[in-house]
Image (cartoon, rainbow, N blue to C red; front, side, top):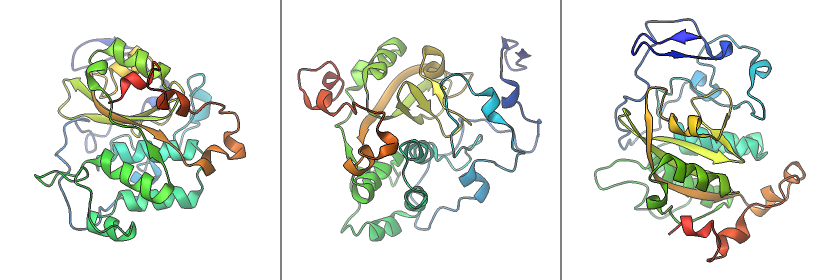
Length: 272
């Protein structure tokens, strides 16, 4: 049991989630500058890529919530604002992509847009990836990479009007069988947070392990002192046929493709 100095409230926390307080490294988790367009590769420290951030390793497996798995990659502070890139990389690991795939995705996702364009052998950068005011859309950038490099298919955009409350969003996500990358807007948060939801788990780059999909986890996905407002955008992801047919994924009998392609299904109504 802990008592927060900021509001005086008491909460239960896992002992393994506690780290030594360091005044030098404490930051406002959701108060970082906008990720503007850069003409040079993004420098990512080894500690950010591995997710250790220089902390001593703990035996996290002993304290995993029931049914959850460790995120191979995580960054508690996420100074580089790589929530979309990190969550999708963890999803690819859960889907049993090779280490070469995981490293290739990360290199592409963290390089400059001109370099990415050359690597994907594209004649231009999609308009959806960079906005008129030169702001990079991290979700669209990752989708571009997944489609071109890894043969993923994606859904159309979410009908965000169906995700305007916590209960509506939770009920929808519990029905959808394929991985979803979503951007969550919360009160008391200065920018949205991107996570992946799949198999009733929340894959968050800022967490050491997945979280059970619930009102609590979705309600505070942008931080413990925030409250869910809505899902502002999102897409469904369909891995390549090669990945879906892997022996390691043989336990997944239904990827949700038929439901999505059926215009009269309950799931299809959540997409434009």
